[in-house]
Image 1: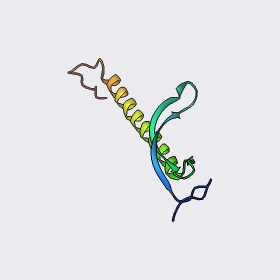
Image 2: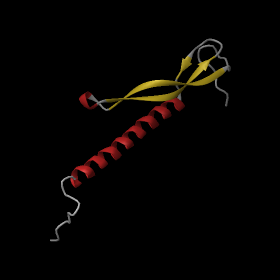
Image 3: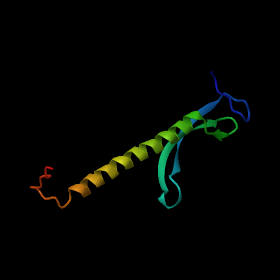
Length: 94
């Protein structure tokens, strides 16, 4: 399968990574992350566009961010639960 430029029909295409800022979440809980995503470029007319590969890279970046956030939150909960228990703390048996 050969890709063609939608603007001029050329097959003289390249792919380059560009840095994008993506928003994860909504409202006051929204976070902004940076991700390198591939963009198609027509060397003949200069047209650039995103395709399925671009969308997959964006989705992967968001999923990586969410997985890292979940792991961080889990560590923080574990640390908070263990704080103040002291080195000789043993759970009571019921």
